[in-house]
Length: 235
View 1 (cartoon, one colour):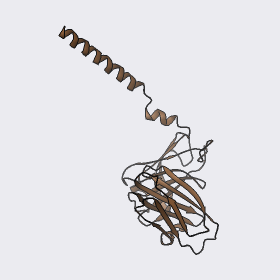
View 2 (tube, rainbow, N blue to C red):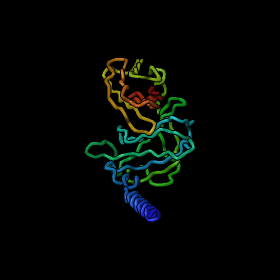
View 3 (tube, rainbow, N blue to C red):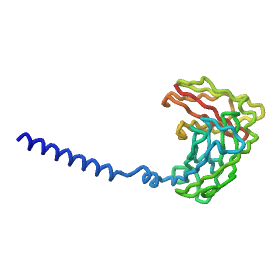
């Protein structure tokens, strides 16, 4: 009787194992879920250390623009590893690329706080036009954008690390009151967690970050004459 009970238990465990395995096999893989993404993502691949004209560092930010709209961003974690920037398309709720639209790439360097335009030097796969579910892979050279040269001296961000509030102090002499400033806060995975637009009527922006998880973020400011990035630590 004891042996029969042991045999029955063994058979039951085998059946449970088969059932569990079958459930795992029938689950939708992440790759398939990606293909079902309504934003029709396009992968843009590059190796930061292979970009001509910059000194890449961990924490640098790479952004893809459709016109003036940021449609994808990625943070550099390893300068020698392949970086995948996922850009998205325009649909009912998302502002991004349309098929065949030209891609514009910016590299925001934490080494010299300068913004660079990335220009393909050697295209390995695809082209710099948006293709739904496509892939673009290239080696780049970087050209500095002139608007970024002096922004680091004109903008101060404190406290850093931040707890509940983050203050952005701007000391511009040549920007007219009322000009628009776009703000984005991007997490270490390249996802935008906070975005807003401000009129430059004052010199201080108070940003509520109390609800954000602790970790590293990149603050990105852009306007007609402003290009600025800063690594922020949220406590």
